Length: 333
Image (cartoon, rainbow, N blue to C red):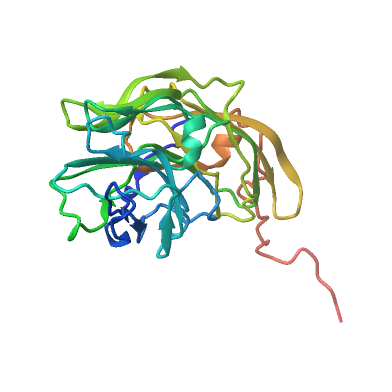
């Protein structure tokens, strides 16, 4: 079935602010590293604040910070949790202070749940973090925001906050169904599989940026992404699946599959097609980080009745008996 196509929505960029620092407790608090004004903008969708699947400006409540000035990326902050609310105060447990004339490197990620989906480590050579064997499958659906920044030649008396420019490291996929049949369409048992679900997110020396390596571990039909789809009550109506966070990767034609069942009910309430299995394959392409891809499925009668078993009631041209030229009977009054 060639009813699938995709388009790219705007990628999600993010900006977090934060920091001022020095080493001795006696130094005034104005020189302490603090985090404030956290912000993530242009999110694909706004979710509830405790949902780690899609972090936005309004929903971010925590990020994890590494960094310092001795080259290890862990001498000042080593997986330090910084918590707060967007537009409010941000705090962490062990107050740190700027050291004059040092050059600092910081890196951060969110949400904290990422540590259960990957091995997170400081990359001292590249002044970054590494995320090894990051898993994004049906059982592991966490957003991954990442940023690193360099702060050269610190002057504690004038040093402002450190600003993280966060980006989403994953891709997001969803499916939209359109009912092109006059009646009610029910989509059930939705499954999506065939993509790779694991990879390493690390610093790429050639591009001097973060990227994905060693992408593999295919999601099979026995452990697919699943979603409920609302009933589409009338022709022209649409319904969407939930969002799926996936590892950015190339898509080989027909390697990724969508399965679901369709039930069609006419406007009189008669079920004409029930639990018809439908399979579709995705076209070749590429999923890039920070992008959301919407695949549109136009459901026509050909899609849910490929064998043409549904026979519509049709009428042939009528035959009309001609009026006789003369009356067939004469009646006297």
